[in-house]
Image 1 (cartoon, one colour):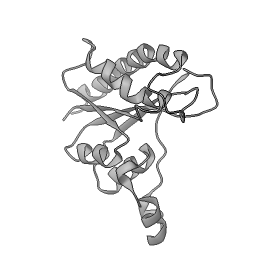
Image 2 (cartoon, rainbow, N blue to C red; image 1 turned 180 degrees about the vertical axis):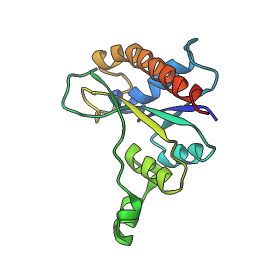
Image 3 (cartoon, one colour; image 1 turned 90 degrees about the horizontal axis):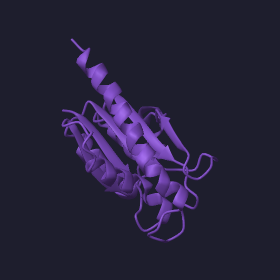
Image 4 (cartoon, one colour; image 1 turned 120 degrees about the vertical axis):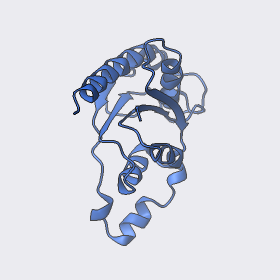
Length: 168
């Protein structure tokens, strides 16, 4: 199967809606490759894991998270995930206590532990101004980052497709 691009976040919390809004924008972009599935998983971590169980060659997440930058700053990251197998039974239970509303790291770790995480995973993250306010409007700097994030994911998809075409 192709690439899954998923937008995560809460549309009721202003800047936290970045991932969902970026996914919506990408879904309408004519540059999106045919083998690219775009989903808005919102805050439902278990939905992301279930979708990954269908089998994808790569995953790209759009998300808003604080890295101490300026609002609207974008990052392309490869996630560092904890290994569920290295956790004690109690740590594993606590870590996966509620995956319905799991953070992306927890959802990805669960996907990894059930063998559903693709070999290529990237996160396009955006620095929020205020990720915790209840508002449907995003900060102007975060809103302005949406087209740049879509451009970034298109470039990443081109790279992934180049890697896929070189496989024997």
